[in-house]
Length: 42
Image 1 (cartoon, helix red, strand yellow):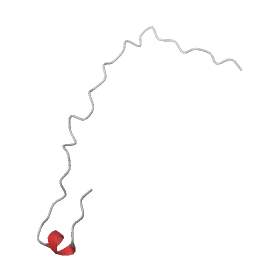
Image 2 (cartoon, helix red, strand yellow):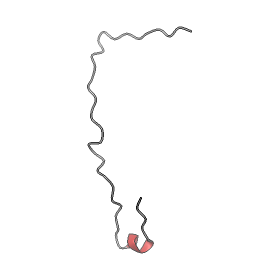
Image 3 (cartoon, one colour):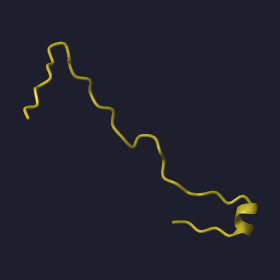
Image 4 (cartoon, one colour):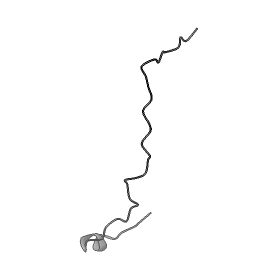
């Protein structure tokens, strides 16, 4: 957590954050040509 005073913000202080890109790995696509949905019995 970062706490800034009004004076620091007016002088141009910036919030230091970790990089946002590269956080999640892209999932592989699955072959859905022969996929079927099951039946939910009640």
